[in-house]
Length: 142
Image 1 (cartoon, rainbow, N blue to C red):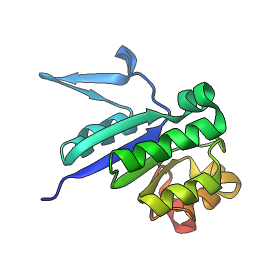
Image 2 (cartoon, rainbow, N blue to C red; image 1 turned 45 degrees about the horizontal axis):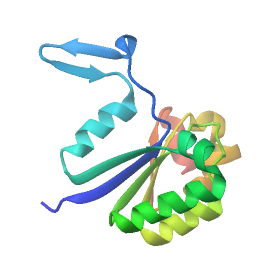
Image 3 (tube, rainbow, N blue to C red; image 1 turned 135 degrees about the vertical axis):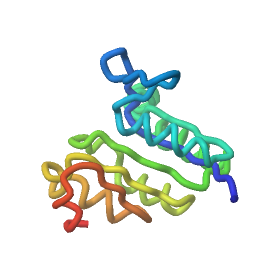
């Protein structure tokens, strides 16, 4: 099986004792993003994560976009998984289009029953694949 370089861009929340379940010798987070990350890491050559909110606040819009673009090129990223906070339109669609031209872009959405019309429908058009976690009925929108 071929191993890929994957970048997950999301708001990174640190799991605390309230969001983890201990089962025998293994700790599982109940946060779907952390669970997904742990599974994907098993099949990657390299798995990187970026907190897009912290980077955006630290570097500003153009600094953030340049940093991510340079990182994707330098690390030869095969897939970018972008998990925006549901109500957050911070990331410029023009930047996502540029990112899409460099690599395979996968959008991971939650709460589309609330944010599809306002945000998700636009971000979804810029990606190769949309993965949806949430209300099953909203899948028909994509």
